[in-house]
View 1 (tube, helix red, strand yellow):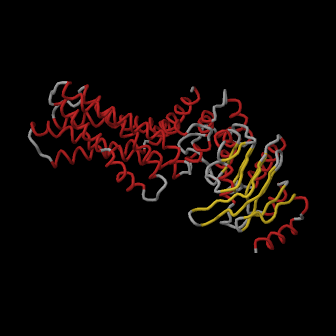
View 2 (view 1 turned 90 degrees about the vertical axis):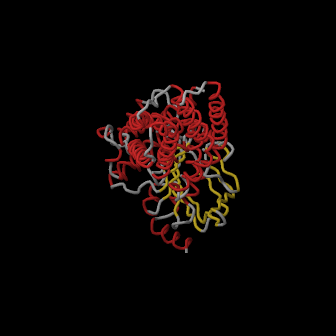
View 3 (view 1 turned 120 degrees about the horizontal axis):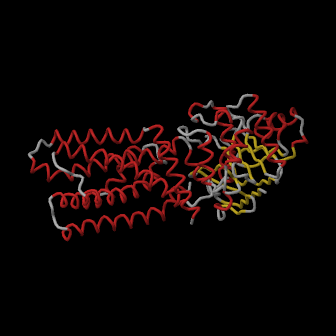
Length: 224
Length: 231
């Protein structure tokens, strides 16, 4: 078991160290997020009341689309430079490799949200950094990244991966989008926990199911 | 150390390996030659556990493939077409990363020794992206040797190496064979391969057409025989 976590730690360390040096992926994700926030802000020139009702939707659309960029880069870049074979040559459990790639992508997606949430709060003129909104983001991006890492392993083996990943990932992410928007929108509107619980339960259920499925099928996906 | 019998492998409907039989002993160097597209890289990828055999039996370091692939991986070192290195990391960091994947305890001394052996000690802190192709190839060899594999697989390992790098790799491969490893490499350089290897193999049309001890041929005789076999 110690060895399993050592492999996960090695992959996460390697991905984050490489990203810290190049800043290619995270800077592209942040710029894309800022542009999306700006576009929504201009397109939906709304009054304060209407902004409160759409803020959660904008937040989640931004998180999912910028997340797709990061997920595309993760295993896609390993495939492009041939280092995926280096990972697969190692005598390591494939699921440990999966968890390593998943965690490093999740950290990047959350890091982008650390920038996006304050900017969105300023542009929409109210505080989005509320505990339940953040919890919703953490749970939602967890499952989204989990299934995204698996699907990026599928799309990385094709030449059309930039197009294929969103096509595969976004339909599967509808439950996350729905539960994320409802839970964070409800939290912003001050709805009681009893009303929000069902959406948080859906997020947790999605996370558990898709992480379990991803762990089970990752080896078959990267097997050849 | 490596035993292959009746190995087949197709890509879609196109058969690449059509029944390969081959043995490579511990402590020997086997050089595989053949025209482009004849299945040399596919054969090495099967042995490296990266792709599954379509049929036949394959045993590497006592592990049957694909059933015992995970156990085999800890005994196999591979240098493939790409160097399998991370360009943002330096040589030291790349080797430390792979040492963690292979669960090597206290790898510092091993990394120091390997970097010294491949002549990269002074450049160990430079990011790999500034390395020349030859330097990357030398680091790739160090990466493959990190866990002291019993089987060393090299797919055209001399690509990008200058004469000094070629001599260095020759010496490293001989050391590995002398220490008991089975070394299998593919090459297009018949004369150099014949001089280096203990066994020469010609793969053509998806089958082993010739497998013989290298001392049975002079370079000229081997080139003539090769031309005849692949014609």
